[in-house]
Image 1 (tube, rainbow, N blue to C red):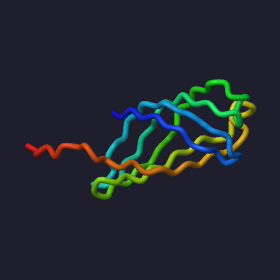
Image 2: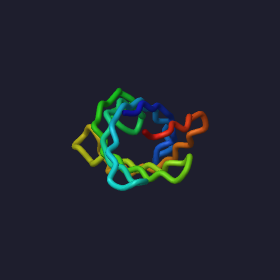
Image 3: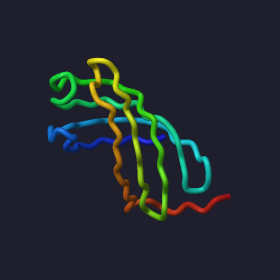
Length: 100
């Protein structure tokens, strides 16, 4: 399980904010797929109203860095655009735990 929050400029240059929680399942050692439940807002979508969305996700980990990709399909007036997002997670305070 993971929790994350962030802010970014969307493709129309509006500031977007989100908070999400989700699960990732290991496919192979570095590759994981999953879903997160996100609450986000941007003036691009619904004039800045808060939107809840389940978002599919793919992650690839290499050392302390994870490359993440998310997709939100176009959905009527609620989400008028297909959204494909990419971002990186860098773990700097992670403890190495020996596997038993």
